[in-house]
Length: 232
Image 1: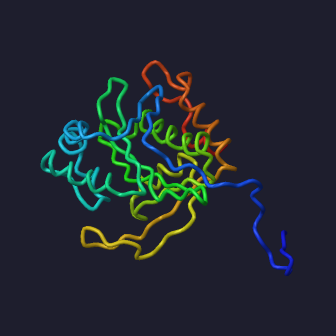
Image 2: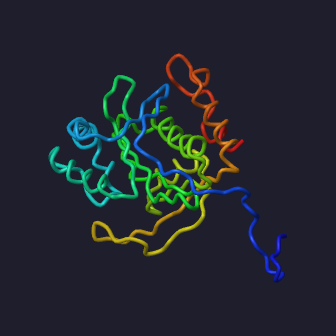
């Protein structure tokens, strides 16, 4: 237990801490996917991937979508990209096809905290190795390249697939903010998850072992489940 000069309990010191650099648009290369800064030329293929070739359930927990046209999707992306505290990335297949988007948001350089959010994966990307690798690449960039202390994930508390994904990736559930948001005319309780810099080395090892080609058979089936790797 640490105490200050008044005998009150205080947190552990963070020696030499300085504000972290804010995430910037960057290209992150993986084996199964590639993340690049969002660009307007992605709008049309993203409309095909997210709206035309995906189940409408892709958009169930977002305030808009599915979008009837490229212009409608462009308008939504324009609002996302316009936020000054957000960096929007496009997830590409190895062949370069845009399959989804994900963002750094709630960027807090003085405290070394950043959230990954506005994750919209088309049906072709969901539940694939590339989907997991995209999240690994963004997390690795935040911790290893930028030196952040905290990496957040939030979702509608009723969004079971998102909660499951956070837990498989090694995030820790921290609690639920009740009556946090109103969207689509309904209430959203927001579930909060996080990874800290102290937890990251273990999770990084687990994720890298899972993503290793040796973990997949000739038909692409995983030999060891991801949650086993990240929780070990």
